[in-house]
Structures are given as C-alpha cells and as structure tokens.
Image (cartoon, rainbow, N blue to C red; front, side, top):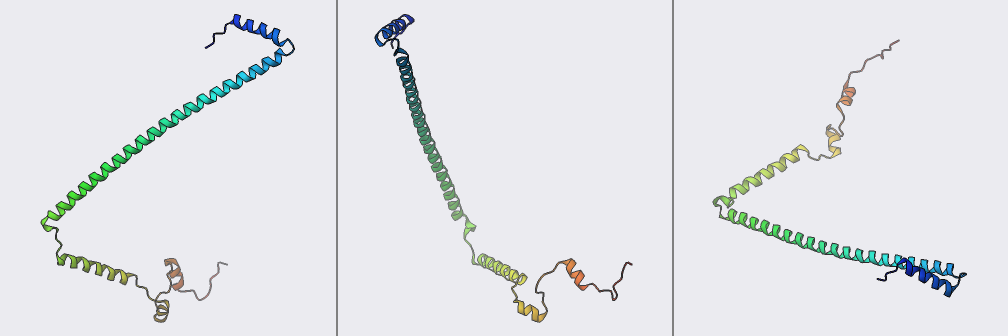
Amino acid sequence: MIDLGLSKLAIIGVVALIVIGPEKLPKVARMAGSLYGRAQRYLHQVKSEVSREIELDELRNLHKEVTETAHSIKADVENSFQGAADDVEAAWRDHPGATSSPATMSDLERKARDFRRKKLSRNAAVPGWYKQRHGGRTHLISGAARVKKFRPRASTPSSFF
C-alpha cells in the first residue's frame, strides 16, 4: 500500500495548486473526494456481498449435513422398527396358541351381531306417521315443559287483588 505521510500530501497539494490553479482546485478536490467516497462504498458493498455468499455457502453445507443426518436417523429407526416387527411376527407364529379356532371366531361374530341388534333396538328409526297413528312421541320436550303441559289447571283464575 502507498505510504502517504503529511509531507507527501503537502507536496501533492502544492503541485495541484500550481497545475490546476486556485480557481478550479476546490471543484477538483470535491470531485476527488466524492470519487473516493464512491470507491469506498463500492468496496464495502463487494466485501459485504462476498461475506454474505460465504455465510450462505456455509448454511447450505450445514443444511446438507443436517438433512443427511436426519435421513440416516430415519433409516436407522425404520430398520429397527422393521426388525422388531419381524421379531414379533416370528414369535406370534411360533406361539402354540396363536392359531385361531373356529369357536373363537364364532364367539366374536356372535358378540358383534348381538351388539348390532342391541344398538338397533335402542335407537330404531320409526317413521313419524307410525308414531302419530299409534300415539308415540313425535318430538321430545323437557321435563319442565312436560310438567306444565300435564299440570291440572285451576277452574277460576285467582287474582292477587
């Protein structure tokens, strides 16, 4: 890098004053300062962009490593579960009471049939016209409404006054 001391800057200023002249020197100095500022901003942008790219590349590498690790863990877990399931299946097949007898299946079928029959008897769908014809309830009312409906009424309305 160029080593610019105070004496060298003074020499450059004196030469610029002689070459450019005292009238144009302030304009040239302002222009040189603005160009120097632009160059600094451009260098700062380039540095920040390079650092962002480096960080982004590091993040991509980290994401790739995490993804690969997650896939390997997932594969290990799936393999262990599959092995455990195979062990359970083999133990189930080797167990002497594992064969299902027809009586057991018929018991399950009978229980299911009874459950369905009881469920239908609890909430059978009876058509509304049949309920009206034979005096069944067509709609439900609350207990308080039922008491009011069937409470005996006084023959003469009594007044407080």
